[in-house]
Structure formats: C-alpha cells, structure tokens
Image 1 (cartoon, rainbow, N blue to C red):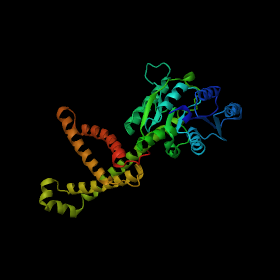
Image 2: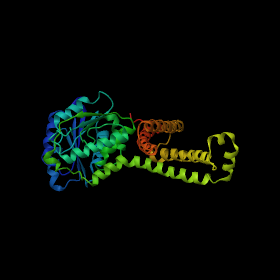
Image 3: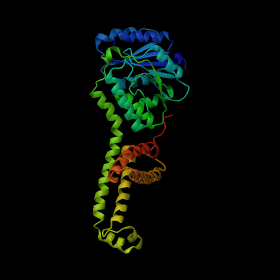
Image 4: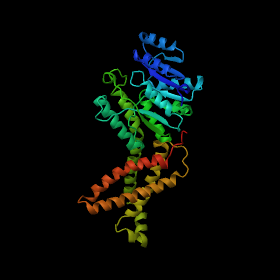
Length: 370
C-alpha cells in the first residue's frame, strides 16, 4: 500500500524531541496523515504538540488527563474512522524505537492479504541492543501466548503495527485502557481468526528503555492477567466439575436402588465386581459433571451465545481425550519403569492444555472478524 493511503497513529505521553523528529521524517516520507494523541501530558510538553499540529499533514488530539495507551489508540481509531478515508492504519511509539524505513516497510506489506502486521524486534541472546529484562519478558510472553493461543509471535509487545481500515471496528471494540490493550488485540485476533504476521524490524532501545512509561509490575500484571484469565476460568470450571463428579459419585454409590439394579443386571454384573454400584454411579456422575462443564465453558469461559454442533463436538472431544489418555499411558507404562498413576498425572496435565486449545478453537469457536 502506498504511504499516501496510510495514517500513522502515535499515542504519546510527555514526549521529548524524538517525537517531532520522527513525525517530520514520516511527513517527508509521504504518509497521508500523521495523527498524534496527547494522552494527558502536562502543560510543559504542549509546545511540542503545538508545533506538530501546525504542520501540514499532521493532526494532534488531546486527552485532558492520562487515560492510558489503549484508550489513546481507540481515540485515534475513532478519529480516523470518522474524519478520513485512508485505507491503511499504522501505529507507532513516540520514544524513537521505530524507524521510518521500518514504518514504510509495514505500509508496503499492507493490502497483500487481510492480516495484522507486527513489527517484530530481535530478542535473540546475541543481540546486544536488548536489555536482559526486556529479552526475558518478551521470550516468556511469547511462549505463554503460543501455549494458550497457538500462535508464535516473536514480539508480543511491539507498538509498530499495521492493518487495513476494515479492521477499525474490531480494534475499537477491543477492551483495555492501558498497555494491556495491545495484548488483548492479539488475543482477540487469535480467537476471531484474524491472521497475524511478524515482520522483522530494527531493534532500538534508548538508554536501555529508561524513558518508557511501562510500569514493570502494574502493567505486567495487567498483561498476564489477560493472558491467563480465560485459561484460569477454564481451570476453575474443570475443578468445580471434578468436585461435583466426586461428591455425586459418593452419594450415588450409597443409593440402594442403584445397588439393586447393578447386582441384578447380567450385563452390569459382568462389567463390575464391586458390591457397591460403582459402575452406574461413575457413569451418572460423569454425565452430569460433563454436562455442567459444557454449560460453564460455553457461557462463562468462552462466552459463546450460539455454537451450532458444539454439543457433539464436545462429546467427540471428551471421548477422544479419554482414548488418547488411556492409549498413551498404557504405551508409556509398557516401556518406562514408572508407576502408571504418575504417568497418567503427567499425560493428563499435558492433555489439559490440549483440551483447552481444542475447545477454544473447535468446540466453541468465535465468529471471524474478517
């Protein structure tokens, strides 16, 4: 996509001279609009914004108080939607970490397919430009995102991103006012099948990133709460249903009517050797707890209003997970000198993550954003 068809949106808080220098370079590169959102900077920084706002092809929006990067981005998106017809939207940071050539590269890649482009920095160990804490934090976040959402994104916290205008409504609907907004965009893209592509950019950290407004504890907590939030709901629903299964089994195995039925039925007698109705109690308790788990996952965990065929997909998945667990545990126990119960605990723990991913992507899929 040509630069003149694109808007570069820059949220900014208490900027220095790097911001007007970057804006001037973007203007000289031919971008259709450079839109800066002043997110509640103090009066002493207003001359910088006034200078930028006076240039042709540039516009500045102001927040009276600091609302956070997420809200600043949404403010910019709303302006682009209502006041321009530009087709491409790029976001960039105001602290000098993004170069104009990299911004142009992302703009050039726009329009080739419907996707979110992510300017990805190099976090490998041999890169001397990356502070150790930034390398560790990004590597860990990428690994967690891959585990829970199925996408390997080398740089989940990049501010240099690009997307087509058709995604504006989607971006406006993503929640989060501060730095967690950008992570929530990635989570929503993964859920709504919006393709994401990483494009390598130059890695720049000014004074080991000392000028960042990212609070390492508060903002990291917000980001990881988002990353794990849905999974913890899934885990909580599973624990609740497991407890229901155990309690219901304990109650049913003492029910005289079930005992009589299991002891007088030739088929049930051939399957069970217990004096208690263990088999029937297990089946009834499991059917009830699995049904409860389906309802909780559909309504509370994945928040799906309508999911045609979800019941049958859920049943198939439950049977499949059970069979895989039994087959894998049996095979490993045959070759490893380890107690089968321990093997089952490890296998079922790994299958728990697989189960989550399959339920999210297949059993309770979200509607596509594109």
